[in-house]
Image (cartoon, rainbow, N blue to C red):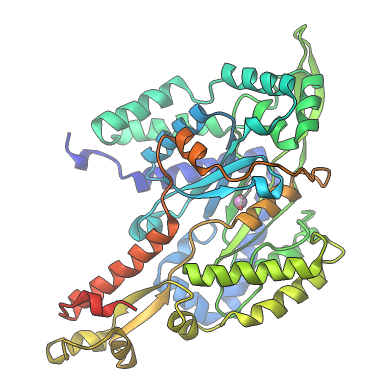
Length: 471
Ligand code: OOG
Ligand code: NI
C-alpha cells in the first residue's frame, strides 16, 4: 500500500499526547491547576518580554507553548518494554539514550522514546521517559518471586492495540480510522487503576522493599506518573506553586538560571497520596493509599557537546560535593548560591559556547548570503561566512534527560525513607536485550542535525566543499 494513505506518525504522536493530557487532567485535577499556572506565567513573561514574544511568534512556537513536552512511565518486564517500543514506534518515537538510575538508589534503568529528526520534533516534541524495573535488585527471594508472578500474570496492552501495532508493522502505516482507534486503545495502557492486584499485606511488603517496586508491580498497568509542560520562567512557577495549593519539590534540578539556557531545568510538585483498594485472597477489597503521581514543568536550553557536558557534570558535581548533604528545603538557598558560583565557569553567551565547541547549533543562510551567492569565494570558511553575516546560527535545543536530575525527580516522589545503595550498576546490554534493539546515541543525533544545517547552507550558497564548513 502506498504511504500516502497512511497518517503521519507525527500526527498520531501529537494526537496521542493531547489525549493523554486530557485523561491525566481528569485523573489528577492538581495537574490541571499546574497547567493553568504555567499558562498564566507564560502569558505574563510574553507580556513583559516583547522580543521573546516576537521570536516565538515567528517560529510558530507560540501555539504549542503549553503542550506537554514529556511524560513518564515505569514497566516491570522485558516483554512490556519491548512491546512499548513497538507501540511508540507507531507514533514515530524511538528509544534514545540510556539512563542508569541505580547509582542514585533507584532500582530502574531507562530510555526516552522520542522523535529523532528536527522536522519531526518540530511537529511534536512529545517524549516519554520509560523505566524498566531491575527485578534482580530485589534481594528477598520470596518477594522477588511474588513480583515476578504478578508481572507475568498481567497484560498491559489491549488486544486491539497489539493487532494495530502488527498491522502498522506489516502494512507500513495506519489509515485514518486505524490511527484514531490506535490512540484510543494505546491510551488504555497509561490509564490509572485504583484497584490494586495485590492484598494490603503484599502491597506493604513490596512497598517496604522500595516504593517504586510497589508502584510498578502492584497495579494492572504502568499508569502515566506525570506529564510536563514547558514554562518560559521555571523560577517564577516554582515560587508561585504554594499560592495555588501545590507543594513543589525542594529545588529546581539542572543548571542555574542563565542568559543562555543550557540543557534542561525541571521541577515538580510532590506526588499525591491517592485512594486505592487492595484485593484480599477472599475477594474482599480493603481501602488504602498509594503515592506515585505528580506534575512537572521544564525549561530547555541548548544541547551540549561531549565537551560541554563534561564541564556541566563537573560543575554540578562540585556543587553537590560542596553542599555535602542532599539539597532540601532548608538548604535550598545555599545550594543555589553554590550552583551559581560554580557555573560562572560556564560561558554564558552563544558566541563563546559555539567557538569553544561546548554546544550544538543550527546554521542558516541569510538573505545577504543568498544575494552574494554568485560572487562568493568558494573557499570561504564557516567562520568567515559568519563574520560576513552570510550565515547565522541558532542554539539547538536539548531534547533528552539528565540522569542526576531524573534521580532527583524520582527521589522527591519516593519520600526520603529510601537511601538504598545497590552493588550492581549500569547494565545497558541487559536493557537493550530487553528492548530487542540498541538505544540511539543522542550525541549522534545532535551532530547530524548540526551537520544537516551546514549542508543546507553550503547548498544554498553554492559551495561544494561541505567539509570545510565543519567547525
Ligand atoms: C521518571 C522521573 C524522571 C525526568 O523528567 O527526569 C523524569 C519517573 O518518575 O518515572 O521524568
Ligand atoms: Ni519528568
